[in-house]
Length: 328
Image (cartoon, rainbow, N blue to C red; front, side):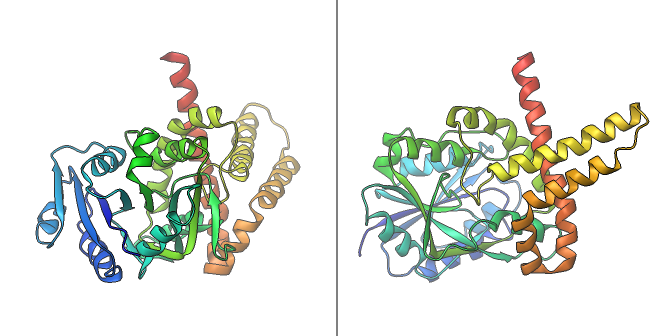
């Protein structure tokens, strides 16, 4: 297979990862004709200085940060090949992974995009809570043998045809912590094409700590609810918006409500709280089992806390969305 590919790497403040990211792209994917486009999205660290030293790449430098959706769309606009491959700047991809993604994309005209599946490996050794974020991000794919259909484009590492991408409207832009992958994934499915993730192509990366993830979830939730209402269904297991996640967030809401009521009315809510605890453990049982299997008992206990923080982000994001709709 000799399909040429334009590899688009949006980068923002990635001075610690961008060099190795490009190195793995080049060294692990030698047998393909390619161009590499690095889009520096207004970085204010040493990212630009580093990428200027990398040979045989095209550099686009934005003076101001405009968001990853804008960077991806601009990369598609200037790409000279029809096959586009998106790789996030903090990813290290596996050998021949791009070739495998392209092969799958071209094997079926009903496939709109093909993405890689992440390994349950966290390269962030400085923030222990990032291990929980890693588990939450990787959960849902552990039982995939070869491939799985998905409802969200795996924008961090995927391939898609430029002509097809343009035909469905390209990337939309959202400020802050992402959300474009959900919206584009919805349009791909509406166009009657599939999103496939394959396990034979994979990547590893650094995961954010729990507090950073919490802030991202608030932002993403506020942006995502409109799309969720339009779609009228939750996403695939392994995504951000699953039915299990929604039910789990509901139980956390009940915790908060009971605590609030207990400050106003002196009543014994012990058994009610215990019932909710058991309900949430039932909802999150498979994830808790997964966290224990990967990291052991300490992570199992921490996951019970981490789940509440993730759910709190969903709750706050939902409240922000409602307030925005009421007052704007």
